[in-house]
Length: 330
Image 1: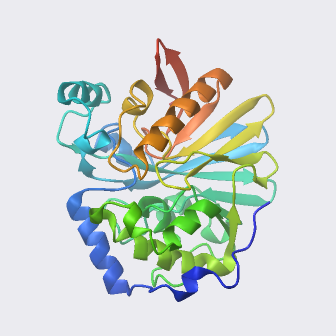
Image 2: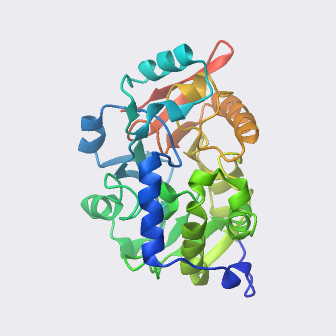
């Protein structure tokens, strides 16, 4: 079961950056065009027009709510891939320009008296095109105060920077227990965290530490195999980050996997799981995770929700020869 962070947690002794330092870091990140997901999806106009999408799985009511979209160089989806093959894959996803605008799809699950939020979006200080979650939750009839549980797939800015209020001090979802992967927590608070990241992403570390400190009083550390509620289980999908998790939802005879960033591109992640997105902390581990996960999803015929797949990110995985194809649901 999930466990509370130890009272003598190492984060207590770590330097916590000022608001100015975090904002400076966010500006630098925007300038280099890097974020947790790097992928083209649907046209920007369509991505911005849709803000929520409802579906049902057994007794679970699910709503996918938009936090907006990212803006970044399209080539970062697989910077080491052969240039012509990469161009063809991007084109197949509808991306023909130099920049990509992947959506940020946040999942909300209603189970009995629980309202469960999976990731909190980027908040107001990451990119101008993100941070739309609160307004879109309200538009979908979901009050932030009604959220009872928040589950994080990993600690990248577009998933975690929305965890705190505008003063970056207290949890934005004040009535919720916050569930964070134990291995992911340990990575970000480690004094070697910067060494596990390229230099251009070093500002992610102090920001993650500040947010971990902010949610610590309401946090429980989780591990693969834990159940958040009955029917919602944590599964290991490491590589994108050291402790990245996904969530498997079982509803009767059906299942659905909330991917986080385990599969981020609607063509490349499926047709070329061996290609390496620039955002992956551990590229070899991430590639192995993608291959195993795709096999499982195709075999089990599970539906998926992808954080950066074309809005609303709901679809299925099918085998196609020696690779896979993603088919989205409208």
